[in-house]
Length: 275
Image (cartoon, rainbow, N blue to C red; front, side, top):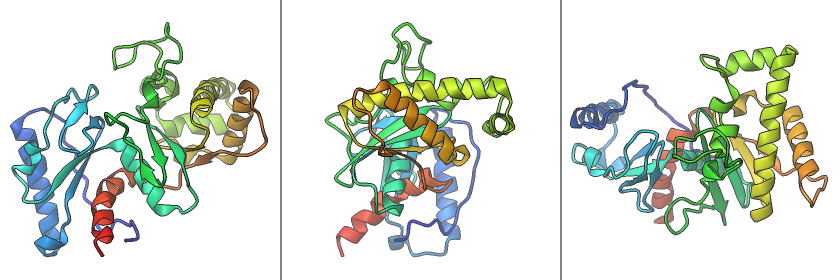
């Protein structure tokens, strides 16, 4: 009920769209559950957080270009696991955890700034999926139609400007980048300023459509400081026709493992709703 993970296990397996992969993951999950020494009925379900868009019922992948898994059915796992299994979009999982651990959100736009960019809308304290399940996918909002190619097949998406992949050079880590930035390296400060400018441009456009609070999460959030957010606010206010002095962009409070926690919370919430 507190949204705290009481046990975890990490397993590094390269994704392959094969029966062998699905069996290996399923057996690893089953083995982990067995190690917990809990009764079967205490396991409410298994959530699979994926870098893909899912159907509103979580039974299939509707858009999975990153993993090339569009059309994948949850049956590939559930046939090996005697529990309810559901797919969840990873960015929406992170937003779900954010919603769970804070009581001051209201309606927000959540941006998960990781290797890839992801987004989610929270309206009336719920993740808003939309008619076809792709509400909140601001990563494919066009910033520059003549920009760099995006994995979606289009050009100049927000993904190509505001993801960690857009910020870092090849083989560069976030840790190294921010060490150089905070030490005053001029070239890194220039790159960071350019990145924040692109992010501010995109946030302003989104904010003009849905005027709500923003939360910045994902891999980048542990490295953000309040001075970065203040600078970002200034850049947004310089671009918008409706400037004010109120802060509306915040750093995520979600823990490092917010995505897997967010894949579990819907099962817990459903159980609590029956009490």
